[in-house]
Image (cartoon, rainbow, N blue to C red; front, side):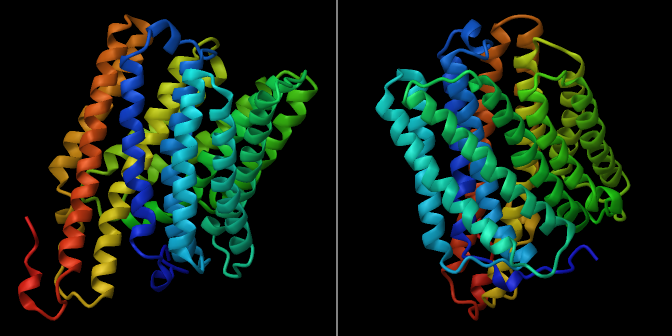
Length: 425
């Protein structure tokens, strides 16, 4: 059963994941503003400092922010790995990750080394605190599901990704750029893409897609073997990179194995046991189709870095993360209210109105399409896309904060007072 091993009674306070989820769209709005106020030629050059700033603003301020926040909820609930002082832990990780992201972005804009030093220290605190705790707790779990195994591997590969990033940052701080610097950059990027992001998304999908969408389970081969195969290919990439071996075979293998997961994810969603439409399906399907497309682009095309980053980062990663947040927040509101003794609470669909989610999705996908058109046609589409990206994230922020506001208003009332059962407007 999909809910086997769930430990809802061990969930952390609701404020723990919420602070991370709220912060992510704020950083997304900043990304849109940076795009609007910078030259298109610089934005489409992967080596320009503003592009590097935006990329890390996405990976740290959006991707890591949501993943780290969600993991603090999922480790206790899906794995029974409980953080003893969740609020203190969340305060340390969230504050240092937020400030570290800000200083890191400012460094690439102003190129002042003290900003890089501050960013490196703060990000080291955030990620080392998080990953050491995750590894410590997850490797003590006795009841192993495919999701828990994927979380374990993610924690190790995520730590490697961060250590590589700290090494690269240290090289810039000390002005000691070695001969293998760009090999370390390539490994850092690939481990971040597949080890930090794709692998965890795989593991979470094994549990979330059947649970939230009453869909078919993934085949056992994908659940039990694909995470290990993906990990092997990532370590093989290190050997290929340092020995200057042609990477084509590894790209084909990654396309096959990750594409295998994406295909079955789409198949599972299209053949749900209870085919009731859920607006968050739009995000999941966009995400999985974008993953397939980005893998094809990465494998068969060269000099398309801007296009690949849009399809992979925005089409795949951020789409899925938004879909997850739209599911997680109403579920947590409902769960925490019922666990406090409220007999009548807003349904998950009442906490965030579907029409508002649908509007945000169409604005978001329009921004992604305009970014793609900018690659093929004109820079004007880049700025139109950025404007829509800002609007979509303002609406995303509004939707999730409005749900949290409804929760807080109900939570302030007496559970035994029947008048408190009226849902706030």
